[in-house]
View 1 (cartoon, rainbow, N blue to C red):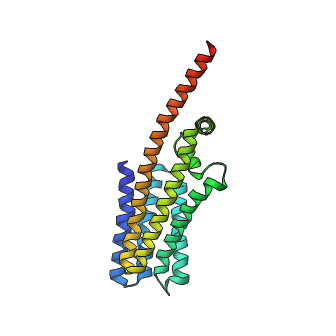
View 2: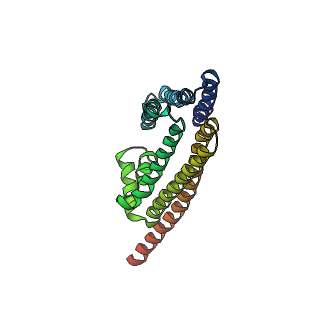
Length: 219
């Protein structure tokens, strides 16, 4: 937990610090934006040094920075705020993926994240999640609830960020563009934990009721 907090501080605080440092030196919004992107890359590097594993999250971070660089070179010079709107568009897309997976996929994408990161990664551990999906309605209901929560939170974050970008300076909008995603993520995680614990209580009750019914039928 301490390590994750330290990396988050490096990525968010470092990003804001590097942005304003580069802005003060060059006076260029695009150059400052790209300088701020160095901090998340450093965070991914720290995670790699500690784990000796290039994770999917790190790969996504590098891809995001590469996309930012391309956008900066193509349209950023004309309107630097396009870079921030690009971040909003990506956030909205992620939120829509969570929501649409509830109707377009057999199981919401949240289930697969939980199956990957909520188990030990073994075949047996992942199979347990498949069995829970089939056996416990409360488990399925909880996965859909979590998906909707993540969708709503990410779309609200997108709207709030877009309003800030439109109504403030690039520097101020950049600061909020670093802070709001972390805030949204923390809120989403907190609500996810609450729903998961509630689902576990209901699941244990369902299992106990099923065991009791089997015991009664055998008499």
